[in-house]
Each structure stands twice: as structure tokens, then as C-alpha cells.
Image (cartoon, rainbow, N blue to C red; front, side, top):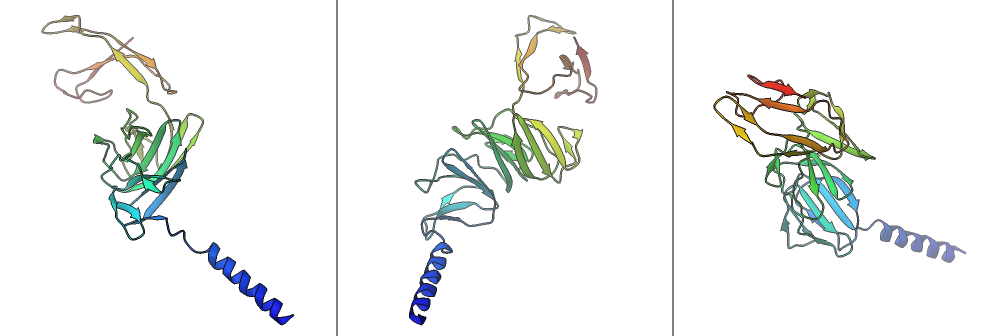
Amino acid sequence: MKKFFIFVLLLSSILMFAQNTPNESTWVTNGAVEVILYADGITYIGGDFTQVGPVGGPMTTRNYLAAINASAGIATAWNPNPDAAVFALTAYGTTIFVGGNFRNIGGQPRNRLAAIDVNTGNVTSWNPNANNIVNALEVSGTTIYAGGYFTEIGGISRPYFAQLDASAPTLTTTSITTFDATSALMGGNVTDDGGATVFERGVVYSSTNTNPEIEGTDVTADSN
């Protein structure tokens, strides 16, 4: 009876050891991984690393964000290359939403929030512009929920938590047809609101401000 008990105990210990032993084919990084997202056979990881690779190498350069083929166990070519740490990831359709402390990603300026095409790795036009770190993201329907240390999103007061539309509006414009020293005639329209609320349509312009925005300095808004 004692021999049987010892055998069972030994077998249980072996099984526990096997269950608690990391897979030898698992990839590692050279810095902290803060978030993991699995979507459509790809494991996306974000954090404070600059390289990923199998145990023992060789390592592949992936700054703060990487995509690993879950079945093959290799890094994909997807490489948005943010310039600082990534703390949050979520997926919507063919888009990966990224939150962190970066200022640039995919070669484009994006303050701490960005949307990346899953196929190309290119940054989309979605650009909420958070004024501080984003460290939590979740999607429900067409809505993205963001949390972090920010107090403003898109210049609007949203202390630490914000609700965003997953798609960016599509704006189409027409060429200027009349142009003189004091005026220009052109047209445009929001053809796809992306799930966002369009509060007003019109034109903002300025004779002194080279980057006019609504409520900006020396800017006139003409709505219709």
C-alpha cells in the first residue's frame, strides 16, 4: 500500500512539474511585456522591450510592439515601431488599437493612442490625441474605452477615462474653383461619420494661422 501511495505521489509530482514548466519553444523579449492580445492566430505583445526571439536567440528587433504567429512561433513582418512603451491593446475588425506612452508610431505622429491595420502595419487616420499615458483599452461594438493618466482627449476634458468611436470619419474635399486675394471657393463633405457624431459642417480658416483649428487663435469658423 505504501509503494502504491509513493508511486501515485511521484506521478502527481511529475505531472505538476510538467504542467508548471514553460514551453521551451516560447519566445522571449529583452524587456517587460505589459499586455498580450490574441486575435486570428496572431499573438500581439506590447511593453518596454526592443527585441523578441526564441530562447537562446537569435533575436529580432521589435520596438515595444510585436506580432508573433501563434502556430509557427515566429515574429511576423508586422512592425508599427512605436517610439516608446505600449501598455494596452485591443482589436476591432482588421484594426489593432494601441495605447501607451509613445508619440510616434508607424512613422506618423500619434500621441499615446493609435489604430494599426492588421495586414499592413500602417497607421490609420484614427487619432484621438491623448495628453498623457494610456494603459487600458477595451472594445464593445463600435466603441473603444480608454483609461490612463490623461486628462484630455482631442483637446476635450476627459480625466482618466474616455469613450471613443472605433472608426475615423471620412472627409472628402473638392478642388478650389475660385481663388483671389481675399477669397477661395471650395467644397467638401463628411461622407462616412465612422460612428461618430457630426456636430457641425463647415470650414475653418485663418489669414495668420497656418494650422487653423476650431476655437484656435485667429481662426474663423463658417458653418452651413
